[in-house]
Image 1 (cartoon, rainbow, N blue to C red):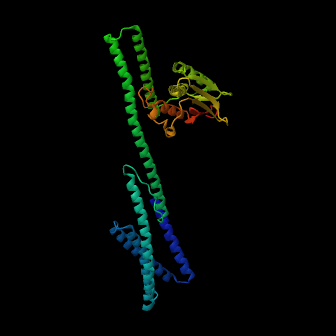
Image 2: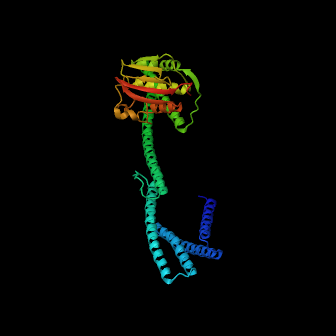
Image 3: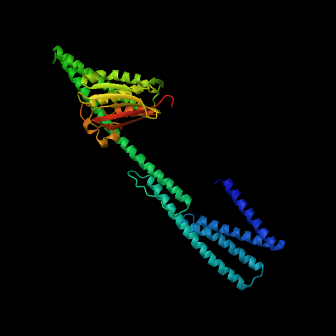
Length: 411
């Protein structure tokens, strides 16, 4: 509450209180002099009690919350006691009646003090819970999240719940950061290996050609072909790294245009047909009718489909078949592009992780596997940039990668 609103609220309470007291005095047919005297004693005693309580709270500002709550509770009791004693003397009550009033006020004050101390203790416990949560927010490593303690004021309990939720999110963020850092280390190690291996081979072949170690035409031609393949492999790895850096930096500038998926599929099939023929893999494409029309950036989405086809061809044994298909969903609300291979399936524990940065299953962690685990991560980033989804599941003797894209009209 702001200072102005707080002062306005306090002023309203004073006006209402004085008004009620004056109305009661008028209803009791009290004279103006008696009314003024009673109000003077009441307001004066309240002012004295407020000053005493303020001084005590200032002196004991570092005391426990329960003690400060007790002082705050005794302030109105002291005000009422002084007011009653003063009005009793004004009304010429007997000593016996005044002592009776003191007994009543002592008993009432004791009860009020006990209630204040109990409430203060509950607030102190809730505050301690908040302090524990706030302290654990800054701790490193694994964070154990405990439910906030109930039984305190609702504001503190709600604040404890919000802090606990923030602590949970912080723990999840730390876990994600640790996983990302581990993934980054693996990526650096694998990329370094995948760069070093072809570079070492190219250097060895260049030295052999320069030194005249090989001079027959067939071997020289084979060396040149090998260097060309290794150069293409290095170029592909560099392209993946560049595309991944754009995705992670949010620097993708997608030039969206409407395209029929049969054009995208036919271009992708044509681009990898030579690799499929060389590997001895049968590559087939099929687009269902009506042909889905989507709005996308053609170079980026063509790269996605090509990455999936390259991956499927690389892991499908000779004589196997790779299918690429496009169709509408059953409710005709989105377009699906799927690539199905004959890789033998992906182990169940690896399925949720195949799109992670630099993740490669055990079967792929061999030299010359054709990549550093970037292709699928790049594919996921580009699909999500188009507000789509990509998933994988085992099917038959292989697995199926499925891309779900919004239709042009839906976008």
